[in-house]
Image 1 (tube, rainbow over the protein chains, first blue to last red):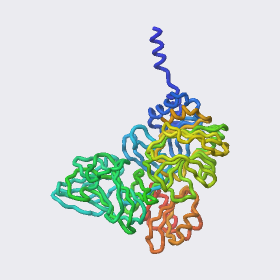
Image 2: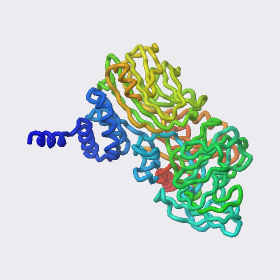
Image 3: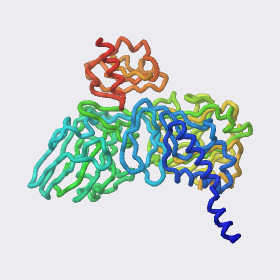
Image 4: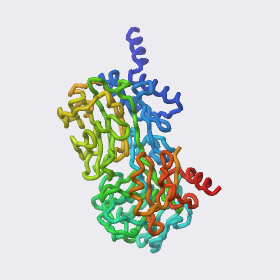
Length: 464
Length: 83
């Protein structure tokens, strides 16, 4: 009997992590916010609790709660850790069902595109330079698109409902082995500038090779094919598969217009049966800085721009999120793809930081990219000088930084990479946690602060 | 409140005018649609800078470029100008 009572009591015990999340959820819903991915957030909290680091944390953010202009933190519970989010345009995200949907101006993109638990997505400003990427207009060729070629015994392109996005049209392409069916748009390109041309493949019954799916006119420079972020080394022998985003990154070597081709058999005749949707052409800043960002719908006759997303959290010293004796800052960032940043203006800082200003810090600890190297950098800002202290090509990193006002340490993916570097700053001036001029800090998976210096062993464990 | 305005800026003045923008307002160049002029769309975070006023143009909404979900902001400017 006693054993039974004990079992019942244990089963009714709510963990601290769950209890904390329940309070968080009530707070978010009570302020008309949205809560998603409950179990993911509880797992993140539990991982901290298992190391006895949850109750001592002064700030914890597990991607879950949000509303327009706000990302909610689980800790503290009074709102002093909530992030203020800015994006003046609408955007799209991949939702929990794997569908691409629109989010309104200022609404954070809680994005599930990496699979599993969601991340908050932060992207730079981008323009989709293709008109009518929603493929409206009907017929065998949508409005604003031209027929490149249509030949063979069987060849058709027919509008169908998109499987991945309820707000756009898609097209099913069918060709026989001697058939080709493809469209194109002309886009003015700039010599020495990089571009990313992407398209979604939704439903493949008969596959063609990637190099036969889409291409840019031969007068452009070297092209590299990707699928969902991974390089396709042999596009001429790799078949397309369903529900993937394919893209080409290339540096233009011409100054006029390039032909952006799309369809079945852009290179040669081939049997096919598949659906295409949501084409996009994005302009990079430097010669090799283009990459695919979230889909930007464009309608007939007009291209469209999605603004950058930034966030700020002020008064972190005043409110005790960092302490007079220092702090430990944990964050996890995913999918940086080892690409160069967009930065083309050395007078501005691009990245995420804890420092003395929410927009232009002159004293800060930061993580950033620049446009000179394909690396993510941990660094410091002093005056107008940003100094890299550690660089990595890793596409997914967990970082723990400790700083006491004079000495900086950092662990990356379990290994101490910055050891006792001298960097002096006034801790009480470090009032701001922010990401500005958003670069390629793409997916934030978690973030936390302690107002103390955690032991080395815990920093290593947290980032493993 | 954000404002969405369109401009034809002399190419030789384009860079210097762009440097005047210090907040998070979004600048998008649509190229040389008129010879010698840069067709620029700006989504102003705050009130537009007065230096830009002389270059404002008002094509029918929304012209060749828009900011996602902000078509209504330009239509307000267009209707105000034409009223």
